[in-house]
Image (cartoon, rainbow, N blue to C red; front, side, top):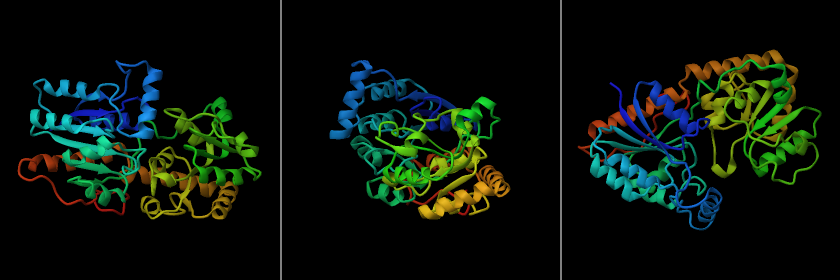
Length: 373
């Protein structure tokens, strides 16, 4: 029997939050969406964006300019049965709103999820931190966040692995025009970061075809071969697998500012059938067997050496790409697999929510060698 879920998140159709909501629906659960985004009823879009940016820099309260709390309180005021109120990265939700939901729906589980480092100010707000003790269960994809969130008052913290959307992240057939637009020997898809730019600048000096896609690059004063490699835009939705499939080697850098050991890109690239060359971490190696399902590097010199090796050995590269996709499908890395794991934990909490407040933190599982995958 499926759950009835009130799903609160940023529901733009190309986003990972929307993909997770669709995964819950595909598992047979009844989902009622509430989009956190939208036009502010108080300010024009340009002014609301400026206010939000100033607040983030100065106070980081994440002002509720779209009146999300009011909309949510209105939804829960209606007589309806809800098993789970699911919050996907809920930065503007207030503790008073969660208390209102608890009073109106005492048997509903309040669950929250974030794919990012939740202790980084870029990914949380003061409101979010104040809300942590009010959630029945908190899901994180970052192993280091488990003890940190517990120390901040979260009652039941669970580690869940990163996931991919099977409908989006899959091998695609490319037209000649698409191969011309996206095709290259080496690509990187991701936001600008200093070390990434440094390494890619050195790599761009080599005689190879490099393309860089993502946000923040065009605003930087780049020069030389790297400036020519930057494509000037991000690739989202259907463009993402096209860029992955058109590249012979897909680099997977981790964000140092986010303390990443693994990220959604880590499973999205192999799921698309792309060859992934990623930074070597324990968690990356837990997800994929080295030199069988993905290749890894620890230094710039090792990265460059492996790039040139695999460009010269296409059969080995293609075999690893095929095995990486097979590993994604067979090891439970899809959003459906991850959502199934999380909702099983939610059901555990739901069955005992009236008897005890929570349990000690422990992981649901991330890579295939972790229990529960």
